[in-house]
Amino acid sequence: MGFGEPLAAVTQLLAGRRITVLTGAGISTDSGIPDYRGPDSPPRTPMTYQQFVGDPDRRRHYWARNHVGWRHVHRTRPNAGHHALSRLEAAGAVIGVITQNVDTLHEAAGSRNVIDLHGRYDRVICLTCRRVVSRDHLAARLDALNPDFADDVGDAEIAPDADAVIDATAHFRVADCEHCGGILKPDIVYFGENVPKPRVAAAYAMVDAADALLVAGSSLTVLSGLRFVRHAHKSGRPIVVVNRGRTRGDDLATIKIDAGCSPVLTELADTVPTTIPT
Image 1 (cartoon, rainbow, N blue to C red):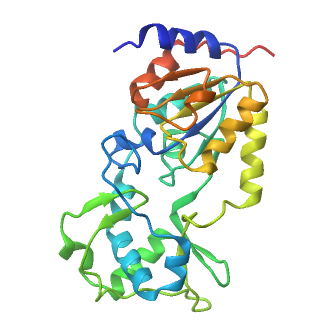
Image 2: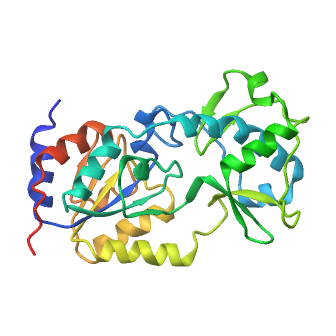
């Protein structure tokens, strides 16, 4: 399926330019990971950092859901959109990816220069001693504390951010930090938390190092992503937005394509001249 004049305009706009890419949940929906704000997404209320830290019952409920949901994300694979960006990076057109996703699928597809703006689902951090362990390691501990829990739940609805929709969690046992007994939390930036300043600075630097910004699969609803679009616009860099439905950055976009990421990015990777002049 071709996208005619809009894609031809994007190809002409990006040809010969170094591109930084900002991605959101819409690029991963074709891998089977639902998003929060897509046109077909049901209303969702994600847990805030304050709720997670301040309420042991909410924390237990979260870990029970995550214990089931993370396995789904663990089994997902990159889709054509992820692979298209990896190809563009390998060819020299894309200099890096800033992703709002925590699913690590860009790295799995072969992208090398990736900033995980909101963290990664596959790591867990202690809020007291700051030690980081793998989610695989915690899974073994939770399995030991809750034998057969994931199997007994069956086919639960999968929600974004390695979550699952489960109601009965009162009997679930939570694991604390093995080193200091502190609260364990996924190494993910929750609502109500700030993205670490060094990570934000690195993302701004990646935008500044490029000649253009390509937004793929983000509604830009939250400021953590929108600020980079505003920054690129303020500095005069062209902005291409590929997303199903409206975004908060549409008025700043040089070109907007209202479509899914996989077909557009695949065609883009096939048509954008990837030899960057030195």
